[in-house]
Amino acid sequence: MVANLRTLALASACAGAALLAVGCGSKTKTKPPIQWQRNMYDTQRADPQEEYTWFPDDRAMRRPVPDTVPRGRSAADSTRPDPDLLAADDHLYRGLVDGKPAESFPMPVTRALLERGQRQFNIFCAACHDRAGSGQAIVPRRGLAPPPKLWDERIRKQAVGYIFQTISNGRATMPPYRHSIPPRDRWAIVAYVRALQASVGVPVDQLDPETRKKIQTVEMPQ
Picture (cartoon, one colour):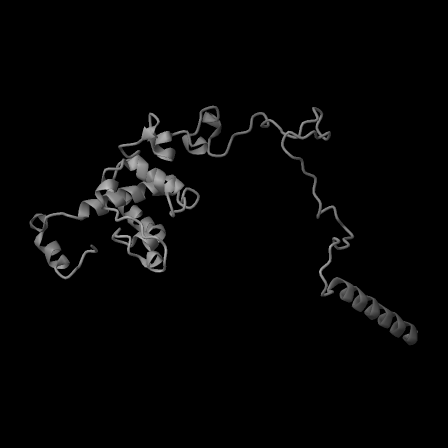
């Protein structure tokens, strides 16, 4: 009895070692591995416009289930378009009014909006533009073409919608940020850029004494 148990244990150990050796080989294999239970590995799927006989009408693409409510709406107003869900507001989502770059903001410009814009600008923009908007940040110093100063007259004259589109879609060596920054945060950045532009070139005699004292030792980028 003991001998039989030892033989069984030895055989099991040898079989396990053989399976381990087969499964952990160092050579690259072109064939898929052996899988004993594939029903959780290969799932049924269908491509758009494909015939799919599982449904009675043989169509893979399905219409919405009756009486369901799209995400972002309530049952009471499920038939009304949701601007946030559909991104239907050209002013907010694309920076356009009547097909042209907007000259106004789609929301009130408040202190909270400016502070949000400053935070997002410092996260996403300051690496190239620097926190003052001079374009002399760490990335240009490492070899990338420096961006223009944000207070240049050309940029001052740009519509806020145009600046929003530049942030969204990119320009020249600047990548698009529409997938990284939500639309309202992009508008907050635009508002903060306008604040940076307004802060450059202000006559000293228009500043309060405390502010004048703070900037006496600050050298603005040229």
